[in-house]
Length: 500
Ligand code: SF4
Picture (cartoon, rainbow, N blue to C red):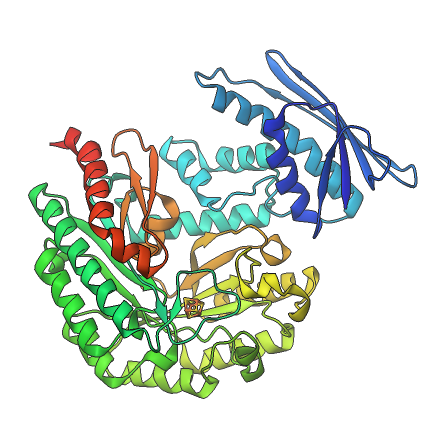
């Protein structure tokens, strides 16, 4: 789809115009100015005085014309960035409206293209905006539908029930630990995940670096009296390493981190069932880690094969039972909607199988075509469902979880996600993952240790976010872990010194 844009020169609009067009069309090219080859032309008329006043007129090749206009009071703002944001949203408003009218597709998230829509509602709750008023603002400003606002409200309510002090946890931190190994690499994966076989040398050096980071950061937290809210072991698959290596890692956690007994939650992703053994489950139990994730993704064997997961459906079920028998009492399972070759019947089958297990939480992802994945590079090879079918599967997940006692408690969106939908974490009440709430709502610092671990430092006073990423590949990590640890400690010193 080629869209010619007239009446807006400012280059800062390029990205937002592209992102919104991507919600409607697979491949979009935005052309500035009048272009013969364009499929549609959109002429904007933008005036910014005390109010922002904007109109858009779309003309297609058949001569059909659709128009929209919008006016919004301009709120005085100290920063140019804030000012531009208001103008950008107003432009997005009319742009989305004409594209919706032309395609007949309603974007349920309106003009929002960001990852964390619930943050918007949290902000309004914190500011004390009455609920009905907050909902109306979200609808007017962003064109979010009733259905999605209701979902956001449910999630915000649940999060505040699980973490009543969510808005005052800035003085604590959570820790993410990234273990970059997996038995094999899945086709849709862009995480730092390296096939573990034949790499023992690399695993040893990596673990050496990780222990170092845990010691140093743990010592800093102790010295500065900063408590840990949650710890999350992700990756890769943290259970890819041996039981002995896991044992030493958790021992390090208990030795180095402050007050581990009172950390609210420690989760270990055991995502790939082919990594789970009785010995490893024993180790988890030994260190009082009882929240794990075992991820089927699908219960259709051909699908697992097509996406390169190299484990069987039977193995997922067996390992789930094994984990249960061995005392794991908070198990999450991930499913993905829209995997290659899957439609409603395969997804309904996955839900039917889930019913036999009833894990404490179920995370329903919608397949996203991330740029670096094998699946995206060879898109033609992987046939996926159409937008309407993906939406029906999402509705099926919503209804099924509701009927079986699960409640939604976090959500996030991704770019290039099928059907422009979302990923939703459902859980039995009071079994929610606190870490997932922390990572989504960005209310406190998360320190990332290990390979590919992204740290997100949140200024406890201003809320300003600073990102810091450890390298994704074990080699670069092994070469530089000391420097990365020091850099993080410097940032922590800067942020937390004002609290002393
Ligand atoms: S198990 Fe997870 S982290 Fe590992 S390759 Fe597959 S999707 Fe990536």
